Length: 121
Image (cartoon, rainbow, N blue to C red; front, side, top):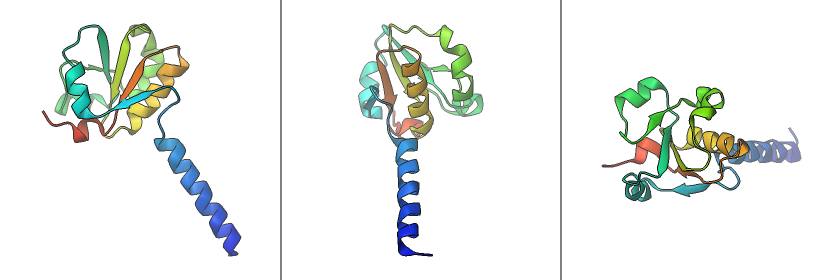
């Protein structure tokens, strides 16, 4: 293969990886430590987009489980006017969920970086 083709393929792979992991436009990201200070506040909503099995095995009581694949159909169950925190296992699915919420008119969406995998009580 020509060198330029290898470079081009590499650039495409890097771009695709970046797009998959980059936060959605207008979405704030916080750490799990920053999340802890928010959990006690009643005027917010907390959404866990992991599967029901993952949620049942390890969860935070403040979070409501709406799996990522169900989110578009269940978006009507959420309040667009509330600050919305989204978590998953690593931060990838919650980033996708945050983008879905933003596209559906949610103004204040916060993605929890590192997800439950980095949460320490």
